[in-house]
Image (tube, rainbow, N blue to C red):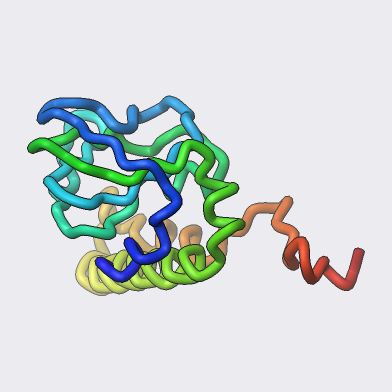
Length: 161
């Protein structure tokens, strides 16, 4: 992940004290953070889902890519130094190599999540309780696609258009 920092020299550096909120769940900022130093805590609701301290780790990417409010709160667990792109979408458009790196990272996360769900499905398939619904969740996760998805790019527009 550290190699992503090589593409971020044009992004301003900000420093945050321990306890500072970088991103707030349910709010939209358009900001993209790339961790330089320190540790952050990622919370969904009242649950801490990760503590991340690897330089080059990105935060805010889901909100930027999906154009939705932040899905988690990111808080500085220690003093943090991060690159902050005020307009995450514009940054990714200017740096397709970062967008590709991020796509690989998200594909790895999706693979890990679906592998876990398949394992759960195999373990609890015959149960009549909520664990028996894992198959439905897995199916929805794998087959869900936004209806307004438009392939192509500014350089190579969708040939169907």
